[in-house]
Amino acid sequence: MKDTTLFLIRHGETASNVDGVWQGGQGDDPLNKRGRVQSLAVATYLTQHLPIGALYTSDLRRAVETAEIIGEGLKLPVQMHAGLREYNFGALEGSTTTEVIAKWQALLDRWRTDPSVRPPGGESAIDFAMRVGGALQEIIAHHQAERAAVVAHGGSLSVGLAVLLGELDKWRAYQMSNCGVTIVTMRPNPTVIAFDETSHLLDIGTAIWDGADASV
Image (cartoon, rainbow, N blue to C red; front, side, top):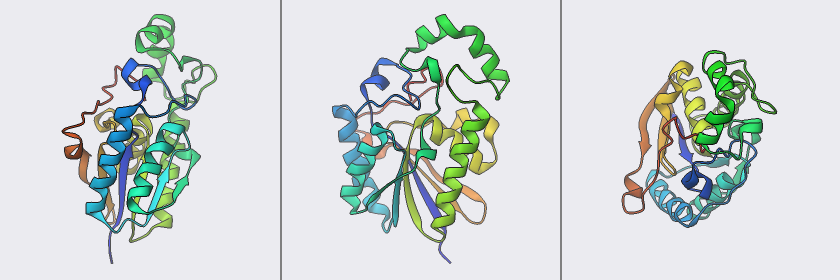
């Protein structure tokens, strides 16, 4: 039997990524020019891994635009799944990292040690991990012995991958670049075949979210 395989793809670059703004689960920036070129490049990269039978995306604009470009290249319809959305940072969204640290340092200190803490108007880390992990498990269940591409966000993909691997406490090790590709197979345990592959972006450039800049 063929392996079930996921291609996890972070969306293309946006102006907020460049400016270090926390977009989160409510921000709805479009791709910038480089983000669109990155998306074309990742579509070409994925043609080397056909057949891919399904294409899912977060329903936020930056992810949908990336997925639509990929879908055109792969001749696949785009299926939106709200469970793949980025972390809802609530009142922190729309601010830069510097602004968040200046205004919300006490909250950030609690957040780092207590996954049940919710930013005002946002969601807790526990709820986020359960939501994204559940979305990925649902996709896996619907595509047994198939390949599926999933377009989402820096935070949702790093946390989702950590959930699949049973290593949620190590999520920071799985941060991904704009239009980087991570390939995971279920055989029967999740195994990372390639992590944050960016060879298709060498002439275009990309930026990785480093944990200090949460412009996801």
